[in-house]
Length: 199
Ligand SMILES: [Ca+2]
Image (cartoon, rainbow, N blue to C red; front, side, top):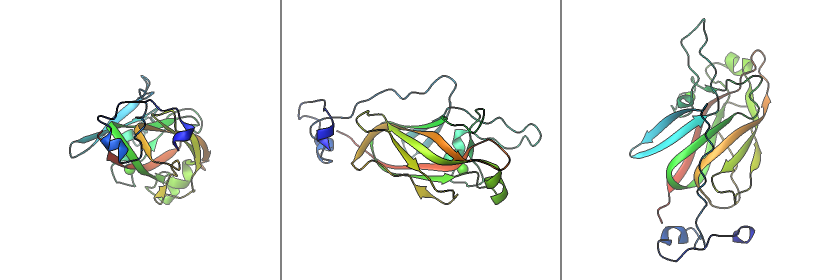
């Protein structure tokens, strides 16, 4: 693993947490999360840990129905009836979600509920993610594209074949299963299983 990377060498002090993960030779790069001004964000607070979910765009509320919202908070509310829906023209290719932790964490798993799962009809009318691009705060992890099933059931997003230490993760829509009616891509839930790393 380490052979692929040129590590930032640090003194041994303060690296015990990383050493336990086999990362004794360096710490991950802390690159600012590329969250632009147009992004919409919501905080997931669990105990004292704050995880920020930001999305590149949000579908506007339906002017007729005007009851449903499609913001980033829908990604972590544990409710399949709510979804983040991108608000870009077309199917939202290139639209993204950034999940930013409040410190360095080891990412163990990422799980997604694809599509708008409120009803089967809505699922089919809206687009689902077919391929998603993964990027981490540390450039030493290669960007990877992961294929997703056309299913609203929880499914894992494959991670790199190595321990992933990250301050944030970015997921970008690369391709979709097109909706039968709307060019709007939806995700009902997105969760990262992670543990804090405290050097
Ligand atoms: Ca939801």
